[in-house]
Amino acid sequence: MAERRPQEKRIILEMGSGNDLYGGDYTKAAIRAVHDALHHSSIGLFQSLGYDHREMRVQVTIGVQQPDQVDTAAVAAELPRGRAEVKAVFGGLDVVDTAQQTTHVIATAAVEAFLPIDAADWRLGSS
Image 1 (cartoon, rainbow, N blue to C red):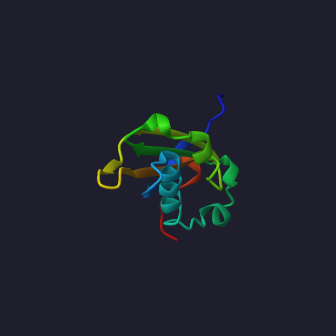
Image 2 (cartoon, rainbow, N blue to C red):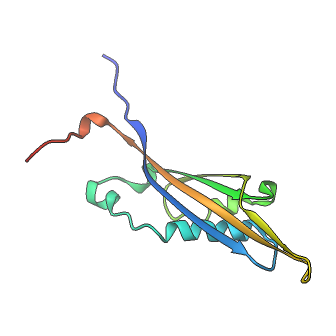
Image 3 (cartoon, one colour):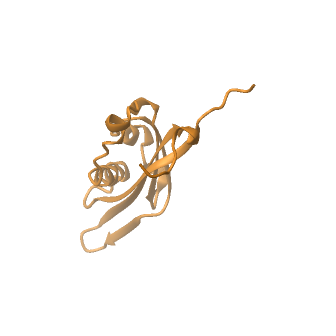
């Protein structure tokens, strides 16, 4: 008989935004967006259900106008739990201030967390 493997399920989705108003730093804006998303969460799931947070895969998608300017390793280092995967895609917003000769960078972040969950371990029912 084949061993059943738990299927990975998304358990968390948080969104955030961040900016760098004067430095034009896409990584700084991305890190601020991730912090914003993380500050919307307080997840007691791990301790309550006995899951080890190291089992969690964290997938981060950063949207900025210049994705190649984001240091994804620096963004991943900001995540306090799980195994981080960070990708930067086209999105966000650049606001150019011609009078000040500055570009204000606005980044968006989607932070998703996945755990291997065996559906057979869970059931709905009345007590």
